[in-house]
Each structure stands twice: as C-alpha cells, then as structure tokens.
Image (tube, rainbow, N blue to C red; front, side, top):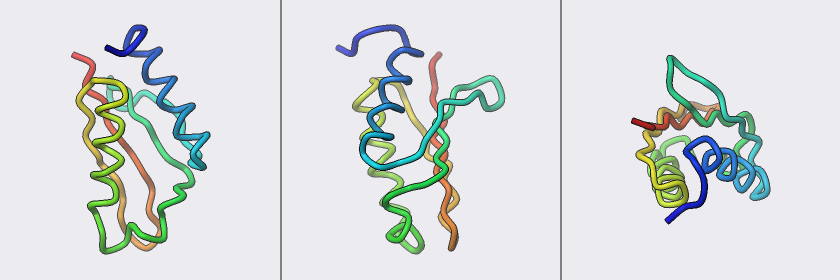
Length: 87
C-alpha cells in the first residue's frame, strides 16, 4: 500500500521520474492531476513505438496505485502527459 494521500504519492512519483532522468512536473489539467514531461530520456524510442509510453503508464499506476492514462504526443518531438484519475 502506498504511503500518503494521492497528492503526496504523485509528488513522490514525480521525484522518482526526475531522478531517473526525466524532467516532469505535477500539474492540474482540466480539474485533474497530470504528470507532464518536458524532457524524456526515452524520447528517441517513442516515435513509432507507443508501447514505450504504455510502459511508463503501467509503472506510474503501480507506483501510486491510482489509474493513469497516457496522453502522450508520440510525434517526432515527443512530449509526455499522464492524466491521473484520483476519484
């Protein structure tokens, strides 16, 4: 069982992603939390391979035990966005 309320768990997940080389922030997106990436260490693998984002989605879901939905831009210049379902 994860420790803390949803926001604490999300802040911990953001810190872990940043330690792994990402540059992410916890933000509010349309009345929901989202984890938005500004620099992804896996960006070179993302174009043509959306499963990379799904792996990150699964990792985050397991880490914070809340449903996460990847809404990443997997174009030539990928940008991560994971929407968090807290209710």
